[in-house]
Length: 51
Length: 226
Image (cartoon, rainbow over all chains, first blue to last red; front, side):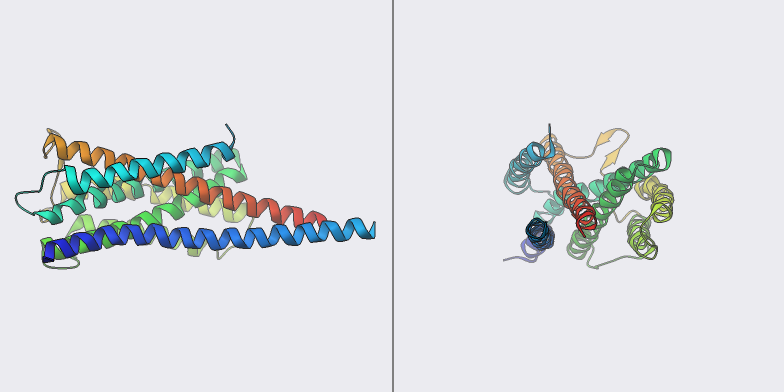
């Protein structure tokens, strides 16, 4: 692999990894939102049982 | 069309266009006689930079809308656009640095106005988050953020035109008044890559915005229930 090929591959890899890292962060945020929804569902269920 | 229908369609279109852009950039565009294979970095580096400018510009437009209407949604949209701009800006700096290393033999050149001004623009918008999170949520934070975002937009044309005003010409000037200084196939590849990058911005913007709105709605719902 030539130097030119290595650097070109590295530049494209940076873009790919940037998008991938962003997707991982968004995925973890979605999991947090999912947990919040589950907590709210439990809260509503408790309120209905009490009421 | 609701956001539920929009997002998958946008993501699918983005994936398709990005696949086409990569195929054109890596296999269709002719190899540059001067720089060889490393010139193909141009097809991601320049669209990334232009998308970062577009993101900051969109953020400033939404900031202006917030100042005119005091609509909280515009504040959130401005924040998300600037966040995207910082991500695209960081990728521009990284890919540019790699390209500089292979083309000029250095990772960075402080003598290049284009590079330094882009870094200033990037750091200016990085500081936006420090300012935003140093103030409690509310109208005061939204006002300060909007004014700051609008100030930053002045740097965009300065950064864009710096290369034309610069006395040093290590950084190549590809787009001149006479037209693009490249072959038709290279220009077509560049246009597709730019469209794909803008589509990526639109998709990530829509995803992040949907997540932020959902988060806000859940907080409101939690407050109502407790």
